Image (cartoon, rainbow, N blue to C red; front, side, top):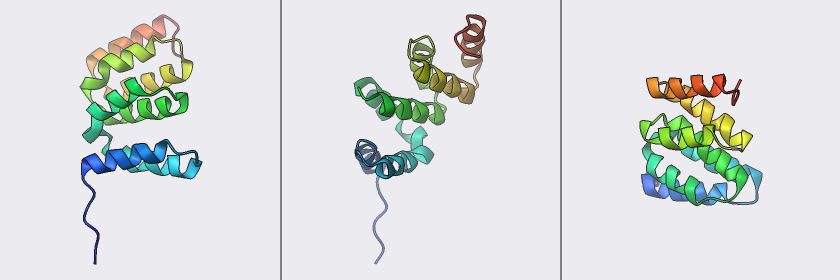
Length: 118
């Protein structure tokens, strides 16, 4: 007998639970579970990023937010592009490149001009 498909809410919950484990393979499994569905979870990802304190998980969450390619992520991506954390800045720049909207390109251009990114 085949298992019922996982709902989006359960998928997000399971992925976050896996990503918070101490086992690197479980963390990777959680990330990979969520990556192809990032666009379905933009709101939850934005909230999880705001609530998270673990630096590594924040980087992964920002990577997922960028992969979602959602205009709703623009304010957070721009904020992180101008932040002090170079890891988050790079993930924000990548997310803005993936978003590829006029405002995203303008923010990237300004960040390059200001020497924030290469």
